[in-house]
Image 1 (cartoon, rainbow, N blue to C red):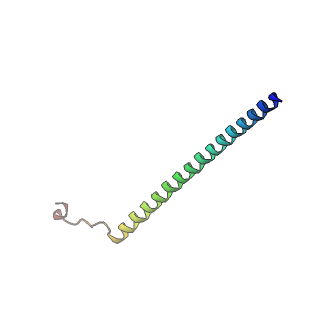
Image 2 (image 1 turned 90 degrees about the horizontal axis):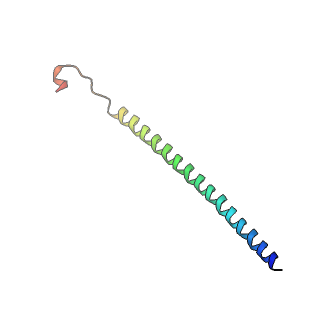
Image 3 (image 1 turned 60 degrees about the vertical axis):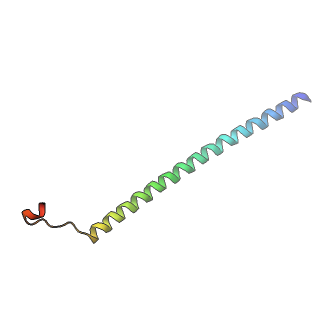
Amino acid sequence: MEEEIKGALALAGVLILGLLFLFGFLIIAVVLILIGLLLFLGFYAYLRLKLWRLRRHPPKELEGPEDYF
């Protein structure tokens, strides 16, 4: 009887540890995916704003020496 209780407790402990490891890895994977998505969206927004600003304010054409000072 006592051996069965120890075995059941050991099985429950191993199952709990296994689930914690599994969910830990899943949480890490989800966090890494979210970080990657945020970086991608941030870079995309940065490029869009940079291109928009270039379209709105084209670079000045330098014509004479007075434009360099």
